[in-house]
Image (cartoon, rainbow, N blue to C red):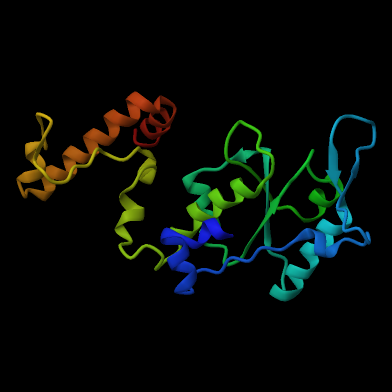
Length: 219
């Protein structure tokens, strides 16, 4: 939670544009030692989070919201987290993120409460908390009013299916490199055309997979 208190996300929380609450699953275990994990059936290394405390934690949240919320389980087995998915999540109102630990969570509770399985990349973390913070950050900035300049969310990378065009600030000349003349011209139509061309070229070079989709959607 401390990491979310800084920068744009922290400001949005203080201004009550968004609210973020951490729920400790250990508070819902029936084990007197507050254990939430056990050995896996069938053998194998590592421990697995039990269904009961996860479900009880979910029920407490759903009861307070007075509805069944959208529940996202952060897992390498999920669909890739994209800007489009972040935008979809930003329109939900309430979003519950479940952070796995150890070898994961008992499949039975996942089948019962999870609506989305999401991965932030093809690698394994020690827990889902970092992945959850990535999702919170990406989703929060798309909530109206979080970015003071809403055009920032429209013009950045992945808007329109392209990477963002290169940008420049003062001084006009640095290490022998000049700011492109078109950006100093004041001709907004030409500037927009230049930016689109640069975004297309950058996407084609660095993310040919994205460019292929962009090209298909604009034929």
